Image (tube, rainbow over all chains, first blue to last red; front, top):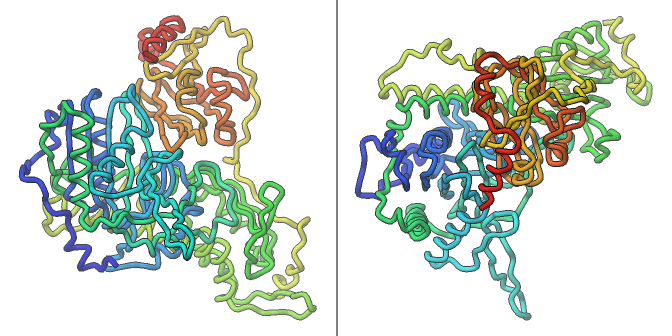
Length: 447
Length: 171
């Protein structure tokens, strides 16, 4: 469990003797081989350091970058957070200062959703695109693990690193099962390729499965990329830096010309003060990047010809379909007594072209009357209080399906995180926070 | 209250209330010039192509057959933003295949005027007909080209040079 105290105290120990005040200078990133570790546990910062190296390093260079993140759920670039992540569960675990226990991050590379914590080590290799190969560096990590004495590891046909674990079978000979220990994701630019993965060393696996089960998934058909579920296990390495050392050794074995390369540790402060990296952090922390990169999807409360799956039963006789592209509501259809009030059309129209993550509060919007009457099946009239109407709307439009309540919490945590990082960037001095300073892409951070 | 209560009846599918935003776009089949003889197609080293119309003001861009083949089965095409003005080499979109997000770069400085929304539904079109600029083809965007764009265009490879270039890349 990452309590706030542990979280703040946690830091990857500085494992290498050489410490450079500014390891990511223009000169440094023009070297043929480079090896970096990060002193920061911040996923937004680490992904932005990585992106900076991908974009700005010499096109012929080969780079190894190792880092460990605070707890976070990381979705692939073209994924849908509403179907991939249990947003209500994610938002429920608020810890101090409005921060979530797990941050929600959309990375820039492809692939599926993963959960990170301090028991995961991230390995990342940046290299020229003309020698792009999906397995080469996963095999490098496999060799590193073998050198650590870990058995049964290999790269499978999905380019994941898996481990075969013997199971104690009663009586007969022992059987074995295969577990995923590291995924692979890639990003290709004009001249460069990035291959990264996250290795389960001693992660808290109990957290993982619940966070990746979205209550909205049975209602949504989405374009884009759907995660493939795999059983996972830890390889059982206690100290992430042991793994770092093994990977560095293997990287040098693979690239003998880089064997004398110094390992440089990128300090959080240095990275934050770097303008290009800071731009990357701001982008990743913007609701525009997190929500509006979502490919088109359609939510239907009931089975439809295009999506005939049986649905978990909703709490009322409520029909709703909603289509959104880049989180903007394009189409909304409903047949519900709730929407038959005189304000019906107006409230539906209000929702059109709104961004899901910017709709103020579905419940407030729909609470135009204190009581609503329903004629139920046996002919009696049921009167519902405002409260239950709100909870029904929340169920359909809010917490449980589109997770609007949680979105507010997540957006708030993005904003808090940005404030915190900006505070560090400014040298940690007390800072009068001006709300208007948080303008990105012409839009204020959602609240 | 009474008026509201009168409105409440058992839900009937025929009484579906529906709204549709004007932003809910359908892609209109707009046949692109069939006699393409007036267009000149050029390629970038990053494997994008651009067809420049005879008027030298508009063009169509996409990714080459060579690149589409190298990327493997595409599962999603992230289209450029309509109306955006970009410089040559700017990342304007991306395609995803086998866990890889690959940038699509602007082959020349241009303004994006129309995007091929069909690709969002059918990314496979980009695998099948990546260099087809008609409806149902794998073209990515239609663009407006200015003076700078024309200069950029001149620096690109024609199809013969590009074939030679990719042949060398394979070695």
